[in-house]
Image 1 (cartoon, rainbow, N blue to C red):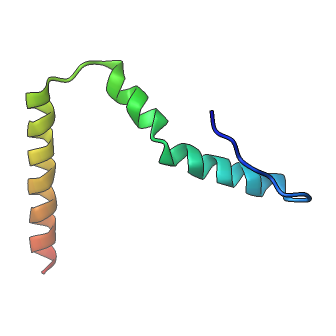
Image 2 (tube, rainbow, N blue to C red):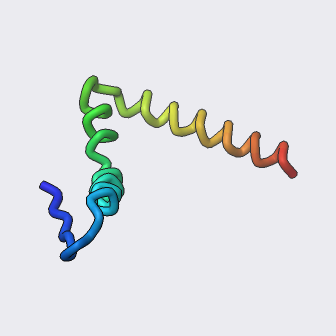
Length: 63
């Protein structure tokens, strides 16, 4: 449960912004999406390697 301390007279929009940022940092949605269906460790590792290769290609093209 997230608790956001609100100061006296603080704007509700500012409090909502704090809540959203704190919620994102907890990675709740990312965790839920990962747990939705099981992914074998070998498949996950392969995806990481593919992403790393893609990033490296993009960086080398920029130089």
